[in-house]
Length: 454
Image 1: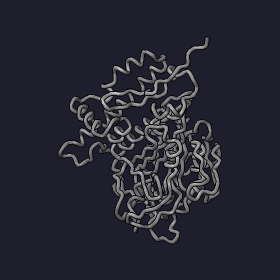
Image 2: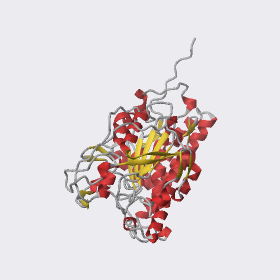
Image 3: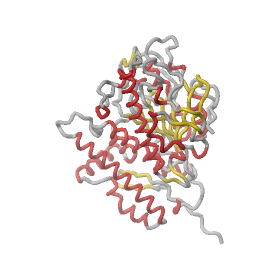
Image 4: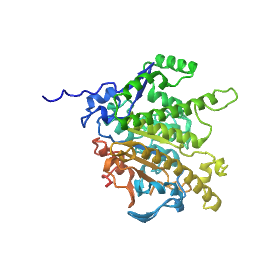
């Protein structure tokens, strides 16, 4: 007689005092190859047991110093530019693409405002209506098309992150609304998806549960008793460990350690910021680099737990005036980007490019460190790193600096410098990425065809 069918527990996550913590897939608990979508909504693990596709878009502002950014050579025989040196260890995981652009970020009769158009167009491929009022309009972004197509099987259809304070109203660039400069993600033509900057709020959005009142009450109890979210569910964890194989026990221990460490860091920043003499917003690290890396860690955790299929992260908003004291740079990034070919400014821009690439290399390394199935989390994902401006002095939107990282489950050819004819719509890349998620679309923004990624 055949064995009775195995049924995966429909609540394959830990619960306790209003907190829900999604777990990685444990092969020893699931003998079958597929977890159907009917289970996905209840478990928060994604639509299939086989590693699902995860996508992230990482944005940097103000263009780059092109002389040091671009690789030399072509195909698999390429050498990274000096600005990309920190990615050398991940060279085989990268596909650097030349020739992509956004013609809808050009003025096209609308006059100045290239920074606002750069970020508004980056994921939409659409022309932003020039307005500083409430009648904003641009296209739907690729991440939200992914969220609409596959996000219903996840706890969070999409995750929007930023390291800059949000602004949704007012005039931020020559008559363009601040909503254009501070948002990459657009649910509809007129509805941006505001990004979250506070790591603690991101963490609680990912792992909080119940009503707002329940979440507030449980948070108060945790703060009063100085206990971690995980302390409330350790008994459940120990019971689960008894049913896991040896490799899965290690996976669970690694996962819980990762969650606890991130929560410790988030909580420590929140406690520091709560001091009366501190001007910092609650929960945000004082150090810019630490802030970016903590947001990267949270993104990795959201993918590792299969909490979301797609995320966006703005390292900084367009026309960012960040300074970099640790690099000896006290002039704002935006001001430096208007370099007028001055050697001193170009050298500082090179250092800033290297700084941002180090953060991306950190994210790529974290994704590679997470084992998933026969490969890694990065193997089953695709990261897009780029800027909506090529050269900050020229404000041009052609031949944009774009890096892809990951193999999308084998659908993407990595380890190459891919040169396209100049002027290829960046939305052609997005159309192909929608295919990777199984999201049907004839076009996005100004797309003309699909881009061959393999």
